[in-house]
Image (cartoon, rainbow, N blue to C red; front, top):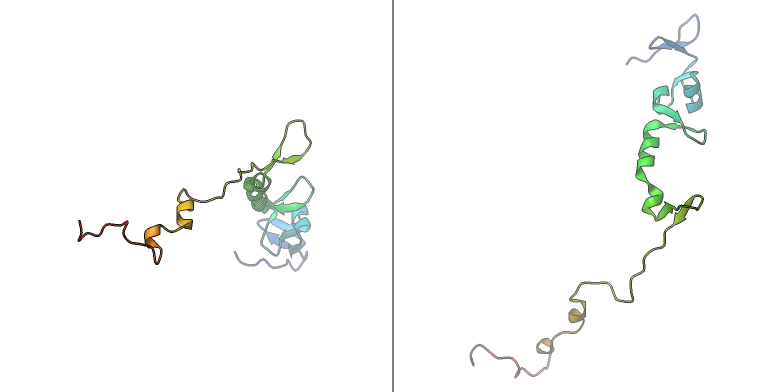
Length: 127
């Protein structure tokens, strides 16, 4: 799209058949119809007013709602309580974490220890 220019008579920008006082403006100006778009390129159709009364990007607002950050960190709604409640983390028993061979790798077998008698192992020549 070609950059719109001001009308010399009225001093307004005409974009898609609508007149705007400014081409670029704040989110409030764009939402109210005073400006056509924000410096970031958001037009009125891209903006939405959230439940706290802030004008935010509609696309970013929807993505953030889908993200569910509170639930990922253990906060859930509980019946009978107002607001979110932190769900307690289930604790493991006092066992160490690791695979099933964790105890075997800690101590080396007797045949691999330096200076251990080799009489217990059979060599292929004597068999």
